[in-house]
Length: 102
Image 1 (cartoon, rainbow, N blue to C red):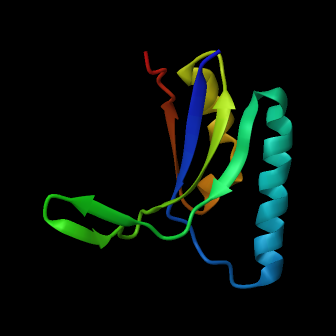
Image 2 (cartoon, one colour):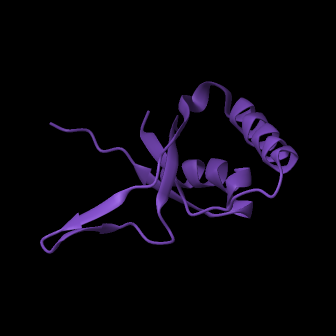
């Protein structure tokens, strides 16, 4: 079964620990709903840097803040799972199939 990365971009800082905890509870419930489809429930990332031929720069506003990995029958199935993620209330979510190296 194909694997898909759900990449989290942007987001907000919560105004209180309670707001952060409420969001985390929603996110954990969503991961629980995914069941056996979850390969990696989530890995948060620190602020990154971009590298190109001119050097290194800040990642900007829409930086990668974390990722999850799931298994799904198709891109459409993966998108349906990702659309229910509560992170979409605070940032954007990108879904990409993990390609097998041969």
